[in-house]
Image 1: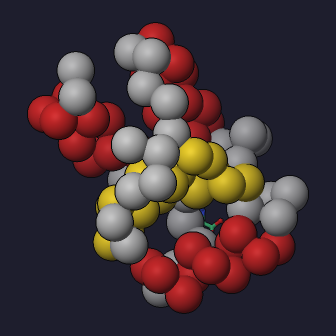
Image 2: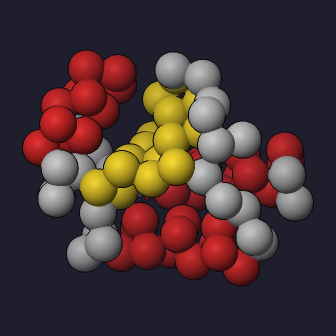
Length: 79
Ligand SMILES: N[C@@H](CCC(=O)N[C@@H](CS)C(=O)NCC(=O)O)C(=O)O
């Protein structure tokens, strides 16, 4: 799962914290990139999805914004 899923986030974002807590609770381990600590990560997210809004889950190169939609995706696929 690690190579195809990347979560763009930053730790002060409550929506990101909500998604990260969900992932931890369900032992889902994916690559994360912090858009606040890493300017390159934010630029990368904008180039993929057209905006820097977090959280955003990139699945095989396709962006999925919205914390609720990200959690629903994992509920359907992995939990
Ligand atoms: N409805 C969105 C809200 C996400 C949101 O507002 N994220 C803020 C950070 S807490 C953000 O990325 N704002 C726009 C920006 O920083 O470019 C969700 O549930 O994911």
